[in-house]
Image (cartoon, rainbow over all chains, first blue to last red; front, side, top):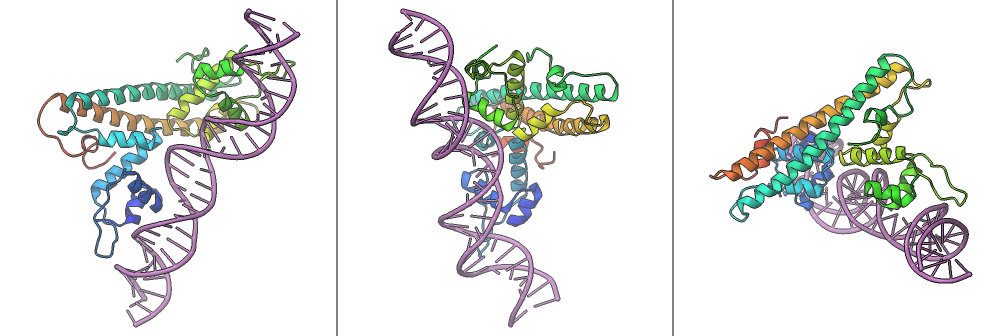
Length: 134
Length: 134
DNA sequence: CTTGACTCCGTACTAAGGTACAGGCTTTAA
DNA sequence: TTAAAGCCTGTACCTTAGTACGGAGTCAAG
């Protein structure tokens, strides 16, 4: 069982952020001690970490919530869950492609740099294919 | 040569956003016609598209600017450019790992869904390793 | 040569995602 | 047993990234 600040520290976020996430429904309301202090579990650590990472990947809190709520339950037809999951996968695949592109461009830049000779004005854009086609 | 709205349409962004990016220094000030109308080039299309994609990947406009400004020029020591590029690459590698993880989890969820049998309360978190270790 | 669509600039407003108090209890360690 | 540190709630404030005017000049089709 950990306290508010311990949970916050575990993910490197502000204590106030936890309350904000609770209000938004991203973190479930944790049990309280008699004093009213929140008591978090190890599950909450994993959940918070997931939120943080997904957010850093460009997902909005709304989308993060959708990801966390994707589950097989009696109230949601199986096919619908699958459809939603598949949509997210497509989205993620596009992000993977873009990231790999940028990474490749940076690698090229680093290599050019180690070498010699002039390069154009914007190596990043050039490395991305010149014609800007993704 | 394209007009403001043509450039905006090419990336699916608002016209006002272009002016905003120009103010922020993300888009260079384009040449003007006698009337004062902006004239954009094909390079600007590529640049704008890059900005949009990088933004969707969770980079802030500040970071996008840093990426675009990474270049080999006489005023920046080669080693420094390389160091910066390498740092960005590390950052991107972490993002790639996270994305792959989430994708794998979604695939597992979709598979579970197609099958039968009960699953836990939050398949996403479970699929991510159970113990939350990344 | 006019009319509707487009563009200009400056300024103000918005939405998302936090962040910071104030005032008042609770814990904990000396 | 008391002082410092931690936690509670509610409310107000902040930053980032746009978005939306208003008023005025410009362009292009009919």
